Each structure stands twice: as structure tokens, then as C-alpha cells.
Length: 88
Image (cartoon, rainbow, N blue to C red; front, side):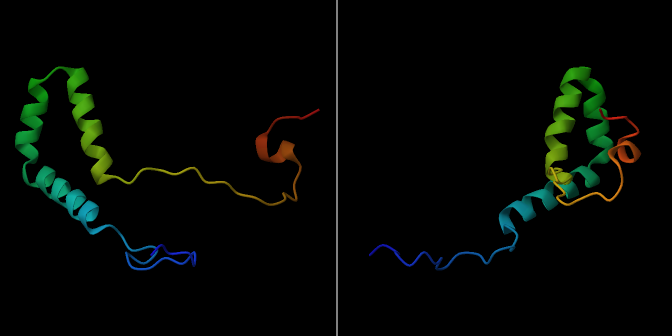
């Protein structure tokens, strides 16, 4: 029977991190730290473009991605003071 209540049953609670993703990120971080010298040697052996692509792919697992943040509200100062530009 379908859930027609609109409520969620089972699964993770809101805000609970995904364990698989968390474990994978930790494993990659540990791998890079434990094999630092070998990774450096391997990266020096490839072309600069390939080196940057490899580095970029690994970074996404070790460093969280930035999110856009919006702030709503009213400023109590003129726009010119905030931006340094005169608005006509």
C-alpha cells in the first residue's frame, strides 16, 4: 500500500551524514597522506594538464565544495558605502 500521509518512514534522519561517502572520503585522504612521496613522484612523471586533472578529481573528496550563500535583509547604510560605487 502506498504512503499517502506525506510523512517519511524509515531511512536516515535529516542531517545524518552518509556513512559510505564519509568512509570513502576518509579512505582517500588517508591514502594520499600515507603515500604522499609516491603520489608526488607519480604526478611529476605526467604532463601538467593530466597532473591538474588528477589533483582536481582527488580534491573533491578531501575538501568540501563551497555553496552559494544568500543573505536577505535591509542595509542601514547607503549602497555607496558598501560597494564604493555611486549609484544613480
